[in-house]
Image (tube, rainbow, N blue to C red; front, side, top):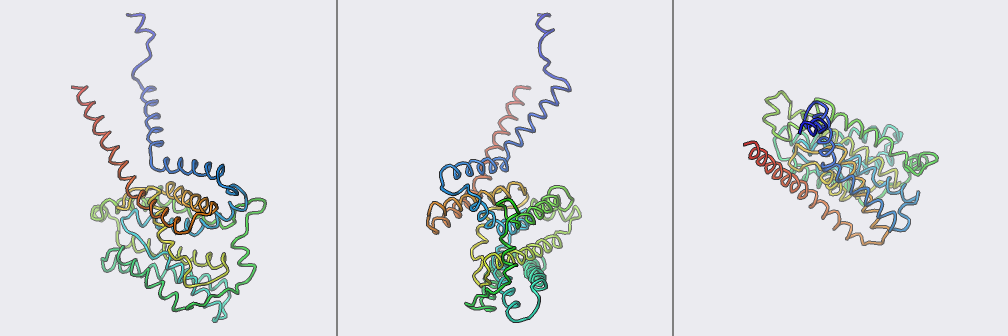
Length: 354
């Protein structure tokens, strides 16, 4: 027995505890919703590359990424807003109104396009501030407010231009919006998206502001008692969302070389789907930017592959709606299952200890 115990592997100690901690951390990371979405994304890309003709070509990759630029940009501030327990359904209408205002100013104001772009972003911020004022100043539900401004801003976009389209933008501007990084099939527009994603990611995950956003999503009153200015923070989130909507309006207009009142119609559904699919809880307080980026890419890959496979546009809407439902149901179901398993393990540990 002494001989056996001499050569037996140690069952405890600092090294064993550190190794156990590393394994637990690895299991925890691999068991997250973010990891699951990334895994599904990888599988989807592989399946589409193998089964859908022309999916993996450089030209299609360029079009796919160009389609994802507006979605990714709008999903960044939407992620922060939903984490606080609010929502902004007016984002697509903000894009449409920004586009028509850009077209109208180019058509009749005589201003330079550079100045017009600055004004459009500022106008987008004002549109977001209207949402923020009603939500934080008057205490109204963001769902009701932004449904109202969704209709209001879309209606105003048709007032600005009617059924008219403005399409005579400078060729060098429209070409810049869609040009690729030299020597690659990656659009240059992806670069500012990545930079903004990095900024939003740092703010959310590495600053006191990000911790305050999660605190607000879990409990507004507790966050207030902890010294967080809930109303002011939420107000500025809506302002940022509006400003990004104005930026997307500029990109959308230049990419398609057309300012129209119906630009980006219905995009809000896809944005919300991407955010929730990325693991952000619709009730607030949970989620991260990595999962949202993976959700954006997954939605883009699925829609692009289905379009190449000549799937009807109505079917694409059905797919988006189905994913939206699943993105609400599945994370909560998974969290519930994990909580039950944790309780069972804890009971077993207590029983074995006794």
